[in-house]
Image (cartoon, rainbow, N blue to C red; front, side, top):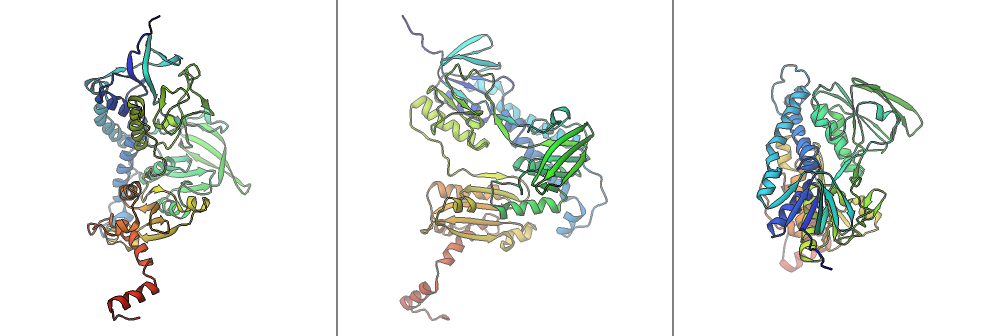
Length: 483
């Protein structure tokens, strides 16, 4: 019996960041590629994540800097009293920015790149067949790039009141006098700061004892203090136990860790309490793809339990960042098309929370290094001691690096202005297995925020100049300075 060849070299399911890069990359390498998306190309990053949130944060920053306190910081006259920003106007700009980027992710563009695009829902019927739009699709390799979605925690009453998530908040068409945010992670903190700067009364509720639990406590404290100064109220270590009310008047009851309780009234409620991988309705069991507690089982080459089906992006259940999704795409292409044993990078993965100040990290935090029992050295430099930070009036925060005994970098944490930009230098240094001394030896432009990378690396150089080392230098080179 004749065995039919698969119709495609690569079938990509999901048109977010990971799926788009896999599809475009595969077609560019000469593969016959089908991209299937049930809604619209662009995914979470374009419509609900990076693009709209950073657009909103910029508008909020500009509005905030017009206010009296911010103006006084820069020696400017206080503006006349102003009303809160009009949220519909701000969100209109957000949608304009999205619309400007949409053509880059459009079906027409991807078809021009040689990718066949099918806008349909679909499901696997067996390990080698995916059915979508009435078609039976076969491919040498499939790629699951179905993304993730916001999770609504099991709070009584939450399903009966109007609540916002990152998928709906950027389409607001009414003003937001008051907002309760459930969750103190990156999304919760970024949106809390954006709305408080636009004139909304904001309270953040979270079960955790502090914000940004993945970061070192002292770094997260810098961000929390900044948000608090701008007017964000916090109920941390508090568990929401009931939500009630209706649009414009929502009541959130909570219990604190000490047993006391309280309630908050707000016109709007935003839930930012985590995300879940999209696996439903795909027929993964029929495809031989194992899913355990909502996570698609995959190895460090991003292969699922069906070796002809790969997974990438948020669907892989690893770090949920657009830049990680793009990295996954490269790993999948090398494995799926060329059988190269490419593996996912899990140690040198930078990320940033785009509050003001920003907080960025690559490698180990101090808490993680301590928990792993590693021997490490710690060096720190304050933004308050950086000339450019002083000129800009942005002196909150610090840069910290961890090294081993020989000076090899184990991790870097920056909390301060432009931390997301500056962390790239340490990501490169770690990827290339460089030492702190290598960064100390590079000339950095003065005055820039990037200089903090050299300044903190210099701290290790200075620490190596022990009294004994100085004594030997005086003897060897005949130096006559004070002893």
